[in-house]
Image (cartoon, rainbow over all chains, first blue to last red; front, side, top):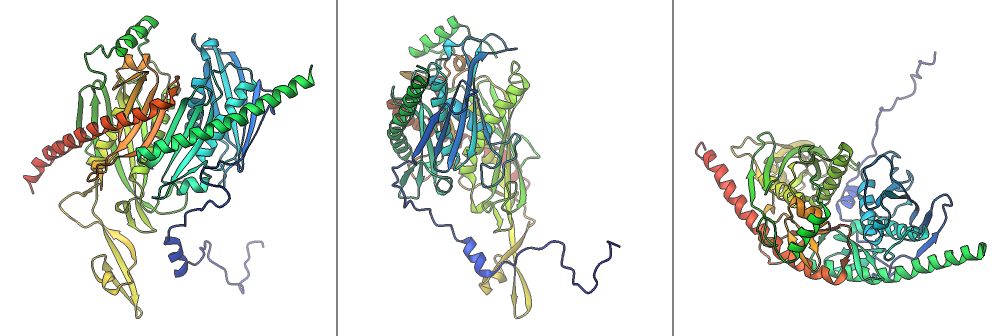
Length: 267
Length: 315
């Protein structure tokens, strides 16, 4: 009897779509206005919160938050490389995972296409700074979990900075701390906005992410996409490098604080 | 992969620092580049590029897609999807998972450069808001004797040069005084003024399509192999294994203007790059890229005239 239908009721169609009005269509065809920066100046980056040693199980760990980018990072190692051929240098493995709830659209928890390029970029930012020649036959594993994502560029930059802090926290020998910063070229002006959010990097003509060793004055990663003139690219690098030096203060302060806290707790 | 021992490594790097290479080239010389277009008859555009012994085949298939909001739906202005396969024959010493990793890496690189270069383009929109072209570019690395990046982009560029987008005509209709008026984009629709293209048709024409707009300013890839204080181009397999750091630059040269555009920069390698070296490197890279782009354009024009010559005999 459950199959009977009410004949007096008008049955609607199985699928439906909202009506599209002519005004809506006009509105949609217009380009979305460029986001404007009212809260911070183009040269400012988002405030950074960084803390090390949050994941007690790992050899070293760090948590970084730059407004709506939230990343946790754990370092395991150096540990023995099993079932592989002898290697004279240590191996660096970086694995980036996005939490399913990290983006506006749900990310399937399985393998997806964006993780690997980001892992490679972060690995590149760190690789020149680690003294891998000291760890033959071993590997250093870095696991990065993105809890909230606000733009790929910001994610790579914050992830690489956090990973470098976590490596230092793990006591792995580095030649210098690696810090990263991103920039975007907006409009034909052109304006250069540092540390773009997701919205801003979508509106940008091109983006540039730079990893820098402020202590040595050398670059470890230069990643540029989109369209920009060579001059604009160089300006972006210069501005990023300037900010990387500032970020270096944040990272070294955090490491100093955590070291002092550790000394204080077990004298 | 041929393993380079420590003594070989130091032999190669010392001679490179003195500007001497095993095959007698100067540091800024490329090996012989050969290029063929139209090698895959079933594709909409294809090419085979050889740089020395490195060989890459690229082919493009075109599809029509519905425009939508989803991840795998079309966009106004077209959509590009690139995939690079590294064949086991090119990398006999790699495990399958290592091959996949390498393929993914190259695919994402090609994708990020070409999606910014090719889309959004008016040429790839068929019916605004409804239908658009979908370009899928597949490249196959058949053998890798060093400098696969440059060879890959040469092949992809040539395939895009060879691409012919079928000529289409929009169909429009308008409701006027309760009557449906049907016309094409050159016809009635325009006269009424309130035209709206709803579909398209493929007119039966003799020629097979129109080439991609701005195909002579597609980007080229230049890998600068870094051996501070010098750099060299087009590393052979052994050189690639002795000198691990390189800077990839993707330059495009919009034709009438003397300016250049950077479509990508990528640094790869276990050594750091001194900050003050970057600027001169980009400047040098631009010079090499311009030479390469000009030479490729010249070769492609010549190649095209050879391919189309026997065809015109029938027309």
